[in-house]
Length: 533
Length: 45
Image (cartoon, rainbow over the protein chains, first blue to last red):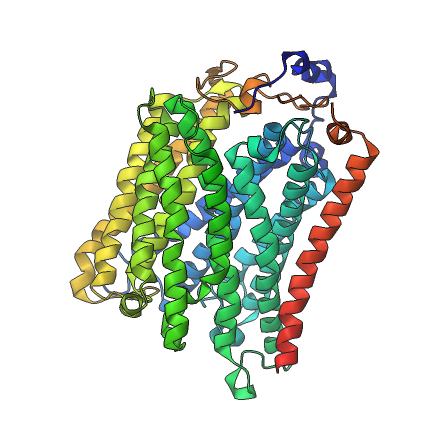
């Protein structure tokens, strides 16, 4: 990793400007252009949305606890699964990563702030009306959309006004993401400290740089698709209406051209987080830094040519199915490089197992299971059997919960001392990890069995043969959901009454925010850029 | 310090201009992709 010239060890500069601290009251948050304030708002917003989406998950699992209709009618159940997916993807996971990027990218590249601070503020505040639009669909005639988060026509063309609200909300969320991505790319390319070459950047910065390019490439594609959907609904076009000469399958192609890179948008920053946590607790440099960068770029490039594996059952020619099958399987090569490097980083390391490390190891273990079930689904003839079953639900929850979410939680524990200047309660953190681990696996591992046995997804009722595993899955989900309250309690207790953190609480941490800034990080940092040797 | 490194120092005009150009180019790419998706589909119909 890079070393820093002591002559330019300028963190005292932040103290000189302590009197330029944050303004007080609500205006601090409304008008702020400070990357740390905006990062905090993103993280709080994503936490709120995580619990909103999580509440829907609990309702879904309560309905599925036993066969028969318990609480909800099928239409409302489908609304729950649809909005749960949209809220978790666009409201929880993505804003959490953007929040982490806001906090960390400027500090890790030695910049004073993001390149476009006012646009940064605008990116965040767009999320609030968008999420209100998305959620208020439950309170309009016809109820919230029930088409699934993929918005497939013809169902999405036929639904009520909440579909228009959702389309507007997704446009706004997309605009927010694109502005955020422009900010991140511009910051990384133009505001790095002297000497901070691209290949000296921490892996979190690298993965976010690549993710931001992915976002700029595919968010407009989703926007194009749902704009056409809006025209089909209200302006007499028939882009996706077979009755008017259109092609609903075309929507699937356009949607998944966005949708599969979107999966990597939600996992690449997680790779970056894990690549920073592991060396800190193994007290060894990351194994294969350059190959990690190239593997990340390879995964991003390959993500553009695999969208068809989501639609093996729509009747593509065999050659098309084979192409998408082989291309998808190819992704396991750079992913395997990453897993190999993470394990090699730990190999013969002087490891300790604080909470961030537990989440990182949990990530490697469980994400790999999600990767393997992805390989199973990538095989076209197998997928035709498993398509739209609970096997798919199990697969993507292993990728997005024990993958993306575990990485976010690990990141929160890892950087909380830097953000707050306080140490969290380690015992509580470990309880949170182990309860999450048990609850998550109990909730989602049985869903592999349910899918293999033929249980379809997006149904509120099911045959008796699926009853037992569904009961266990619901118990696991309730345990997982309840254990997340420990995280909130731990963070709040840390901020209110945690003991003071050391300057560098993690012995092996070596990026700029640990080596070159005081703890907690001052409101303004790096007004004079450090020089990296 | 190299000329390039000096250029990156905060407050240097060249650095600010380059940041704005980078941002505008990225925004133009996003808009172009959005337009292309719709235009190619309209043209195809």
